[in-house]
Length: 211
Image 1 (tube, rainbow, N blue to C red):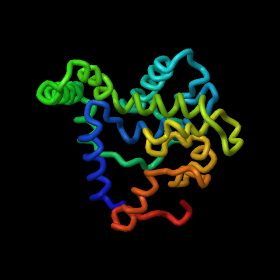
Image 2 (cartoon, rainbow, N blue to C red):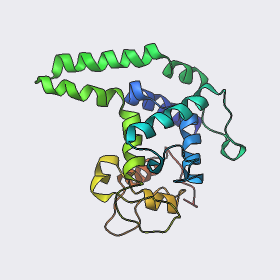
Image 3 (cartoon, rainbow, N blue to C red):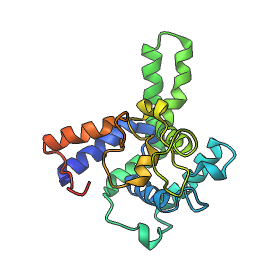
């Protein structure tokens, strides 16, 4: 996509993810590491080296913040021309900003919630990004079926995939990491792929022929 749309989606992602916004550069490095070291000890978020999902999330958080602060340089293989927006990166990483989003979420519930138990959903909104990543990497590498032998434990967790918009076709994704369509079988459907096709039709994104 061009620079305008890159900045648009950068800002749009920040607004919609709010308190759990993830730095694109740091996230991209983690994702490349995850594919290169899938389900080995060097994988930043493999469920096979932790007793529970919380331990995996905490381990990923520590590596993520190393790359956010830029005090730790990634291995040469994982360096790249990632989209960066220094001003937005600084703003989004400020704790006062994250807390501010949390306050807005609480006020929304305060004015619109119709039952006390709905407030129990607030922690999910506060940590939506990490929770999404935890579900994808924990379930996607422990439960489900495999279409391909990728020399790892990646799975397709079909019953849960409708909640993750295609992200839980992890076995397919690890087989073809550059493919924009995570579905490979006739009974699999990746809704995010449909969105990408529409964005391409609108000339917002340009799909490379090798994808």
